[in-house]
Amino acid sequence: MSRIRFFVTLLLLLHVGLLLWVAATLPIGPHEAKIFFTQQTPVARLMQLGYHLFPQTPFLNIRAPFLVLHLVNLFLFYRLSKLLLKDEVQLYTAFVTFLLLPGIVSSAVLATSTGMILAVYQAFLILYLQKKRWAAYALLPLFLLIDKSCVIFYFALLTYALWGRHSRLLLLSATLFAVAVSLYGINMHGKPVNYFVDTVALYAAIFSPLLFLYFFYAMYRILLKGEKNIIWHISFVVLLLSLVISLRQRIPIEDFAPYVIVAIPLMVQLFFRSFRVRLPQFRTRYLYAVVLVYAVLVLNTLILFFHRPLFALLKNPRHHFAASFYLPYWCAEALKDEGIRKIRVDSVKLAYQFRFYGIAPTGSLRLTRQPLEKARSVTIRYKGHRIERCYVSKINN
Image (cartoon, rainbow, N blue to C red; front, side):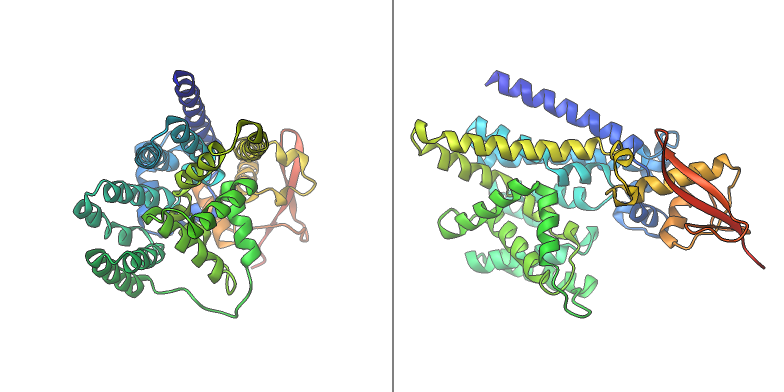
């Protein structure tokens, strides 16, 4: 068992080191830049706090608070898993799985509300499972302060209270659900369009494809015959709700995923239960399946960590999943090399990114992707490879 602990500790240190490196080298994204300059939400305030505390470490400074939140979430997940899994092998399997999830890695280095949601949600679950109900209930109003995803959580909690006939929790969750709906509303609008496949693909990206397939099976298996505790109930209701809503419209997956992934220990528990009831000669195919699932999971996570070389391999760099982070930054650096500190752009989000890089969205110059008359070309390169070419032209008065 000491070897397992050593391996997990080593993996954790490597994980934190890689996150620090990615957070320090990943440019600000369009959504992050818009939040930073236009909002006063908890996410914006954390970004601004990091920016003012560590002004000499660009990119890492705005993400430092979210890295700290990530470490808190790792600790809370370990504590939560320990309440559910008494066997240490299962406990460390669940922890390593959570550590490697692409969705968790992404939430650690991006300025989003996911880390705050996970922290408060896991703290609530730990207190609830420890029978510290009043302390758990005291945390519930905090979800209102984070963002609109509280509507989904309160609805799932309300269904759990109804199903389990928990009168106090029912009254509290119903009240909070009503308040959340009055504050944030229910986003159901537009012409119905089926995004079911897109939603499944997003979950597959968050978990990794094979792991999500087994996770979905585990949730269904527990539904048929298994212990349906509060973690399973909320995870299942939120997962089902996201899939049903996606039949009509595109959903913000970040509002749903934090409440789903916390059920990882239940999936691990089900696997070990199924594995150990079989005779040794029939366990081989299970081991092969585990190796395949975790090989795909590790590969997906490694691509997230070491994604920049893909720019040199892709025919069209704009198809890179991080293109909206890097291309504006490289373009801004190329413009500054040309002595350009003021330029107008067509995209509002790009203007916020340029503003973060020290280029004001004003002046007599305009940036376009198409060559105009008397336009000057600016080449964006990565490791000697030409990624894209932009054009700078004067605005006709």
